Image (cartoon, rainbow, N blue to C red; front, side, top):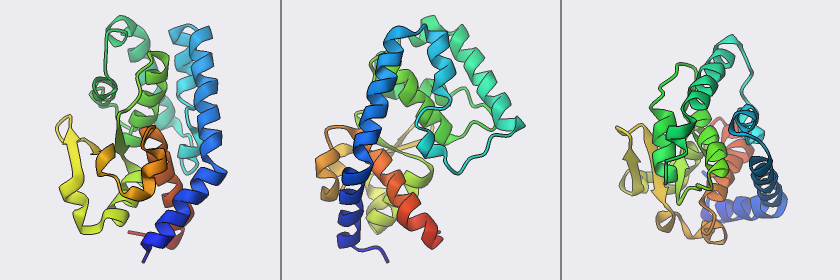
Length: 194
């Protein structure tokens, strides 16, 4: 079983070894968002946070899903540009409900498109590895602390409800999500956590 000491050490390891790379990546994408048209920027969005997708292999199904989502977002730029909150953006992208475009892709694309429109998450969204990490960390308290929206398809935890080991990351909620992904890939998934 993962202990509080182990969680703390994994968070510290993330901060020491990976966090600055994630911050640099966001800065790079932010700069890109200021120099490209929305269409050109969107082309880059499907490889956003590629470290998250290390376990995914491209195949005809997800390539077709990416194309479908790309065309929809490109066509609906004027609607998307009026979205004022990250929560509304992730719901908008989730509502596309494209087969082979799962919760990880919805989150990563929402974060990338959010950068273009200066919208960032103010809560920690949970999907795939981060969801499993938080379930493991919170144990029996998971269901009490996790909230949902968009017909319960999107799970999140309020920043103030995250364990104190994440205190150094709480000003930037997407870094907590990435840290949870790191914990999943470095510790839980290799242990065949279920």
